[in-house]
Amino acid sequence: MKRAIQFLANTLGYEVHRRSWFGPRERSKMMKGLGINLVLDVGANDGPYATNLRKDGYKGRIWSYEPLHKTFADLAKAAASDDLWRTINCGCGAGAGTAVINVAKNSYSSSLLPMLEAHSVNAPYAEYVSRETVSVCSLDDSVMPSLKPEDKVWLKVDTQGYEAEVFKGATRLLPHVRALECELSLVPLYEGQLLIDELITMIYRMGFRMVGVAPVFWELETGVTLQVDGTFVRAREVDHRL
Picture 1 (cartoon, rainbow, N blue to C red):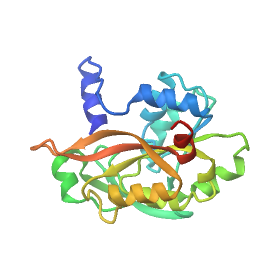
Picture 2 (picture 1 turned 135 degrees about the vertical axis):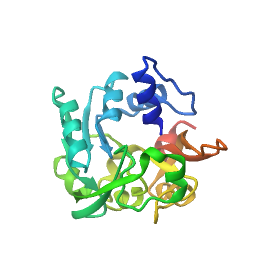
Picture 3 (picture 1 turned 180 degrees about the vertical axis):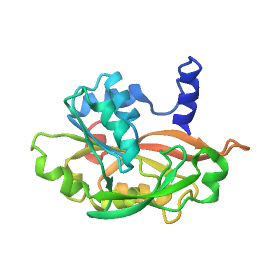
Picture 4 (picture 1 turned 45 degrees about the vertical axis):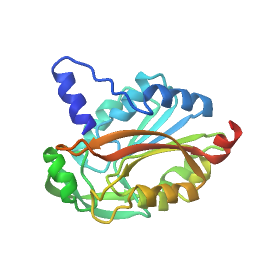
């Protein structure tokens, strides 16, 4: 939803700045403080997250993962002039293979999981319009062979309910991750997804603590928050500052 609002506003010549508990300025400060030199952009769509990182001053490496073929072409075009921005045409999951993804009208709501009514009713532009067979890889297989001992990783996961599977495929990578961002749903939006309490519990068990949150999706009639973006940092980093 946030991208749709930003797109409409930009089309009309306006720039949107949303007040939240955690935003680009906070992210930028945290990345600098943690010495981040590799960002894994999982669920990159056509590149808005990486593009904004560059605008906010991040100069390190970015690896963007996007499974949809047409959307990936736009992503690759966005990254073409940036030597430190790598694009990978696959989704991320617990292991390697292929899968059938549900393609949404707005592309960025596409998911390997069926969409539920709470999502479709409050985001009509997110309805599924087709299906596509895509490649799936694990972050362990994709990243670990090239990871350097000095790398400090920031992991962003925007996979429309598939976050838990991404983490399952990153068990060897996670010790190198200093911070992560992911979507947290307060109500079921995709069939089979973990909800906010279950996902936070999983992330805490992986050794992270929440340090930021920003609402990103609301119920149209009531304004009730349906989904937030959560930011987590290694517990030792949080404890060090207390």
